[in-house]
Image (cartoon, rainbow, N blue to C red; front, side):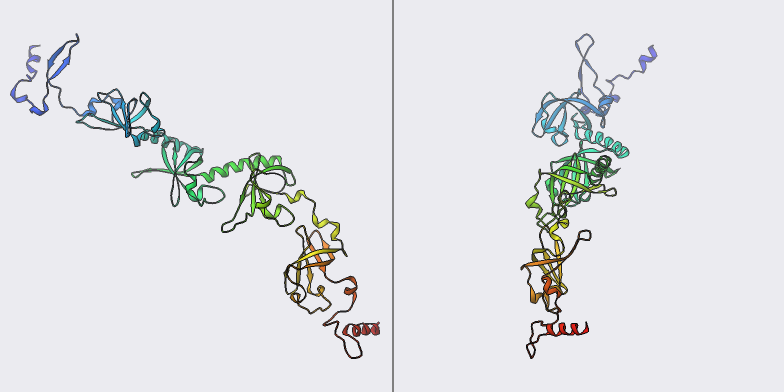
Length: 422
């Protein structure tokens, strides 16, 4: 016992005296509640004084002790409160108030001052990254909120972690032209790339892939209950316009969550401007005309619910129709006879002069009376003439009305020749 006591170093001996600036006399509490003077505590690294659960990089629970404009003082059970900068407050950080409990991660400690810096954002990023890796492996979607638009796409917040969606992967109908309009909006997307290196975490997502997966599920369900020829009631979702064009060329309809494609040519038998006859929210009766398994697209038609104008009795052979000249060609003219039906009159059916050019006989936009020579509803062909039946029976050539000596014209001469042959 005496030997052990002799080995104890006397803190007052000159050889063991520490520099004055490193030496400090402390008043330590006694077990009885009193105080006594004791030797100075040895200088220790601050991290050695922090409990294991509160070391740098560890997660700790805390409570907001004071809320300031630039951040928060957080009580984490240490000798001093920790500082949570406003930029590290994480999702909904602006709504934190005094007394709120929260979990943070210790990111820095100052050995001299004893100050701690904590971050809620880094903790959220860590948790979000774990979820992103799980979602990547399981191919499950993640909720995203657009925070910024860039030249090549959009930046999104994924539960506290920043991700990127290229412009070509935002939508399954093509890239958005106004990415700024997406800022603040939320949607789901699939993780297509999740890598981590010394530069940080790289998270790439695709909303397009998620939309296509959902479309595939809806298409399969729709195809099981409907087929070509099925009649449906659908609602107009939006009109579609091509780039550099003012008029819409098609419309997208919704039927119990399934998107239906209605081309402008399927709205009516005659050509009509879609924006004049269709509007979002309008309810329509349509017929399924195509189920595209490869594109998982359903095409519908309105005009298929209407009577076929090509089977109209007014198109019978010999009937006279009111028509409008729509175009002239070297071989004849096209005429509109109503209900979207175009008929053709060969140049030989325009006048008695079979060599007369169409432009010399009629003009575009001219209203005429035309006689039906034939109609094929299957091939959608209508043959017309401007000649009467009597004129069609007469021999024709150049200048039928030209009169020769003796009062005879070319038509009469041809008739006489035919009679002689007969």
